[in-house]
Amino acid sequence: MAQAISGKHHWGEFCRLGSISGKASRRHDALLAVCRWALVALIPILLVLPPALVLAQGAPRVTSVDPASGKVNDTIAITGESLGRSSVSAVFLSDDKLDYKASITDQSATKIVIKVPQVKPGEYHVSIQMGPAIYIQPVVFTVQR
Image 1 (cartoon, rainbow, N blue to C red):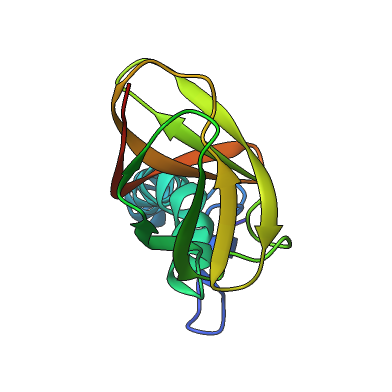
Image 2 (cartoon, helix red, strand yellow):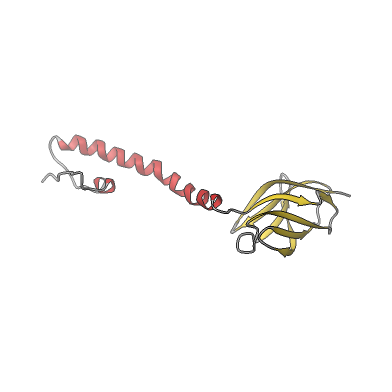
């Protein structure tokens, strides 16, 4: 028996309708194709949307480092927003291949103080860890000899 599709149904219900016979069958097939397309198109968006919302709402970010250069074991201050312990679990100096973990000596919502890790002289991006992910920030620190 054919099942009528009324305006009262949620779009997701159309994908679950049973078999429809007659003229409605072609509409059902077209609707089923649209439902499949919608699911395929929406799943990647839904997987990306939650992290984007998290980053948009008070996401930790580094705005500066002071001093801008120093030696291994020097203490430097990283300033920014939402840098507290509940947001940032670790700080790294990152080159184009590796992330070198720095030891945190002090941490607040607007400032993290670290010791420069054992790295070769050169330029490194300051990176922060949030959960399991490490985010490279657009702030550069230069390690001197």
